[in-house]
Image 1 (cartoon, rainbow, N blue to C red):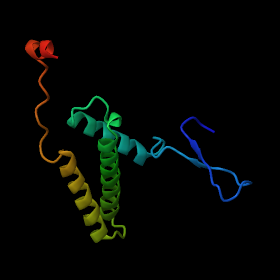
Image 2 (image 1 turned 90 degrees about the vertical axis):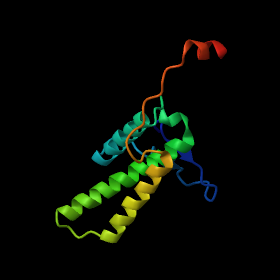
Image 3 (image 1 turned 180 degrees about the vertical axis):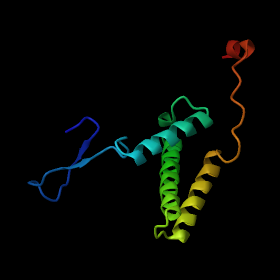
Image 4 (image 1 turned 60 degrees about the vertical axis):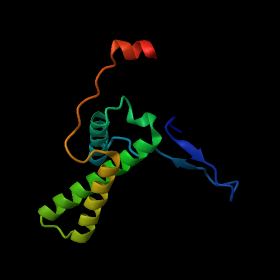
Length: 124
């Protein structure tokens, strides 16, 4: 069993094989790579060293990246002339926009944080 996977014990049957929980995004597909790319962009816009160190922000950003990726693929399918539920596409895009607002990513990026002054460093 890989180190990224953890066994899930099912107490209903002692003879059953334990289920394996895999990482949510492993980066092997085009969609997974796009989600990782979006997460890296959010990390830069939020001025965080690592978005994964803050679980609440990471969970929201991951959901946003997944929704945006789904909306992009649905929009591309619609533009190719495939049958797409346009109301569902609008709901996906609106949900993504609301998450962007929640994270403070809507609108142009703000200025980068200023480095601490010598006085601030001495006060710490």
